[in-house]
Length: 400
Image (cartoon, rainbow, N blue to C red; front, side, top):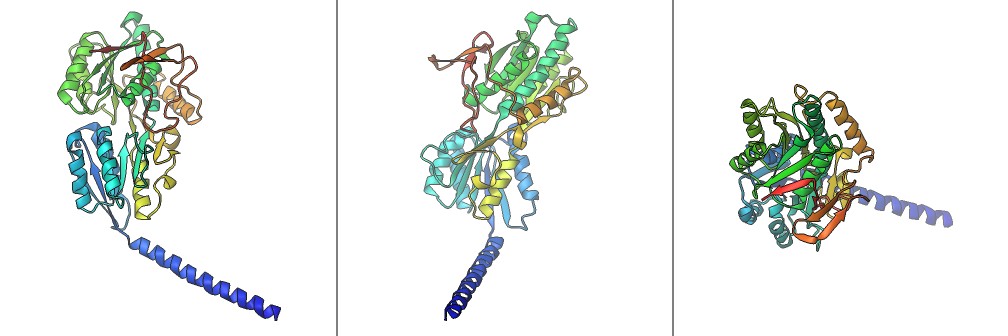
């Protein structure tokens, strides 16, 4: 009798197991038939390196073998004021996933995410995902300060070469920086850059000019020309066009000693005799994983390698989110490529502390908010969006 009961129980379990196996397989078959539409909102177009960097990610989605299950659409040249309308249009076009690519879009994106719970929103460079979190609103960004610090080392090595060769004297070790806005993202980046420079040339200083816009070729070019006229011999940028690179190349053609460090794409093609190096975030790593997640009805953060904090993900060189682009061997100082590789490995092994040293800084909007870097500051520790927002005393000069 006991044996019969055991056999009956086993039989029942087998039947139940077969039933759930059928259900599971059935669901997988349904998943394989699922299709989604992905929409992008860009503040520029392909002519702007920042936007083009995202378009590269968009093209990777289009080229990926999704068996026709993923379609992509995009809105270009959308000002921050018109961002919400562009997102509404994408919602009305039945987009399942909307990728917004400018910090100024985030408030509208989160508002629409709340109103449209079936649509997933991913905001690049945003910092509001974990404030009253929503299951369908996410933020992401790469640790670009790592790329800027290494680019600063490249610039510092060139600066040292110029000093050693007698082309300039130590007092002329001045860096110029074309910056969009006085946001933490921008301040963190140019601080990392000058600290990279000063790891090679400790006396170097930096002048910063703000454009107060992300995308203005003419204004960025004009700011660069002013920095060169003021005596800056290396120019870098956190702005979205090739204006600074072109300005440096034109100045060099006129006999000025000046070099350039780019952002978002290699700029050697437009400034072959002045651009030393560039760095960028590879957005495709996150975006491709997000598309796969939405396609398979899985949580986005579950499927992305990086530092996950709630609905926010960031990563750096350790997960290949950051790339150092095309060291210009024709003009870079001797040993530059080796130094770049050494520092890439240093970041991957968590051996480099960028925001640390005999420096003090102040918040440009609150003189009572100061920092002493003798004990160090850990950037991107709890969020993908940069948070360092201090102007270093005696090192960085913001020109109004």
